Each structure stands twice: as structure tokens, then as C-alpha cells.
Image (cartoon, helix red, strand yellow):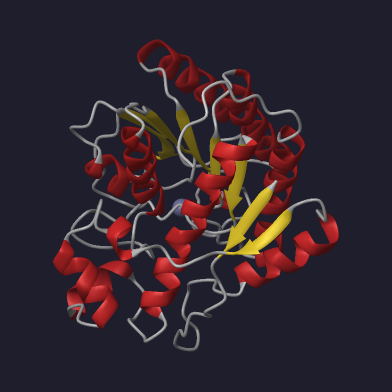
Length: 311
Ligand SMILES: [Zn+2]
């Protein structure tokens, strides 16, 4: 399996900033020894024309040229620096590269990404551009060149609601947005996904996994995708300082295995993004992410692809 990283351009954050920027390097280091079969690659910059498939031109220009307002920067929660355009384009580029690899191999991953709070008009909650939305639009446009339509399911299991993604695809019947998230967690004003399942604080493995089974069954009844994106947020884990849920590491493994088996048994190309993870001990977050990637790499063996598209 191929996996792409975007942290070639390190974020420049003020001392003590709560965003765990060092997590990405820790994850790559852990994969080197613990998952040597995963092909880890630097991501390319996402082309600006692809960003514009989703985001308003004046917002993209604001990010690229450092002309975001103070309010826009507060919404994102990260200060603009000269690194911001590179880093945020590369973060999307990692998902675009994973999309191309998944079309070839069945499954591929972005070691970051899952920036699901970003909407068409602006960023939010540590998210500048919405990588999965951009990749969805790119996949659909690649297929359209071949005279094909591609329906996309976005299975967002980050503990926070994928409100930006939900808003972007609110009126789009070709994209099914599914979000399983903490009811009491950010964003406090939720958007409407095609299927939202809200979980109470302290939710544990069994309740979570039965909610997920119900969600996948409902998705099956309502939609038949050609491509799936899986936001495998580690922030559902009990060791997360922002998550408010209480999944064990084994519970997260069962979650991942369910989604991977669901996609594989339907012969769907699957793009996995790591999304959120803010462990009180960051190494715990990295362990959960390594486990997710190891499970994906195992599932990658003999992943069937019935209807490849694009190139
Ligand atoms: Zn999250």
C-alpha cells in the first residue's frame, strides 16, 4: 500500500500552540520500523485548478497570497505563515495522490488529511482546504472525461462532525456524506450530512460499533458508491484530549476492520485519511494511527477492483 505525507514543510506555530504538529513526523518514524511494507511517499502540491473545483476563488487566493482576514485565521485556528500555502496544498495533494494509487491498487492513504471542517468559502477547525471534497471532484471530473459518472461515499469517522464536507455536498446526490461523531463536540452548530449519527460523551466500543453497523446498513440501503473515502480519525480513542468518547485501541481496530471489509467486499477503491488525533500522550495517537494503517495494508492484499476509472 502507498501512503503519502505532507509535512515536508513544517508548520510554524507559536510556542505552546495546541495543534500537535509533531505528530506527523512521529507517525512516519513509527511506520518506518513497524510497517516497512507501506510505501511512504512525499505528496505533491495539489494543483490550484483542483482546489478551485471546491473552494471560492477569493478564499484560495487569500490562502495563497497571505491575505486572509484576522477572522478567517481565527476560524482556521492556525496563523497564516509563508508555509501555509505549501503545506495546505500538499495536504490536499496527499489525498489526490492516494486517490490515484487507490484507483490502481484498491486502497491507499494520506498520513494526514481529512480536513473536513473546511467549507467552500473558508477554513475552520485546523482545516484550510477540504482534501476529500477536492479529491471527490477530481475523481468525478476524471471519470466524466471517459463519459462515466462516479458516485462517492464519504465515511467520516473522525470524532468531530464533517460539517464542511456536509455543506459542500448538501445538494449533491452523487455524493453520500456519512458522519459518526460526538454529539457534544465541535462543531457546536452541526451541518446536515446525508446521514448523521450522534454519539454521547463516554461512548464505548460496543455502542460505537453497533452504531457504525447501523450506519453502514443504512448507507447500503440508500446509496451505491463507485469510490469511498474513509476518514479514520484517531480522536475517537479514550486517550484523546478533545474526543470525549472512550473507544479502546481494540475498538478502533474493529471500527477500521469493519469499514475496510465493507469497501473491499464491494470492490470499491478506498482512500483512507488519518484526520484528527490529539492524544494526551501523542505517542498513543500515533499507535492508534499505525494500527489503522497496518490494517489497511493487510486489507490491500488482493483488493478487488471491478470498475477502475481515471488514470
Ligand atoms: Zn476530529
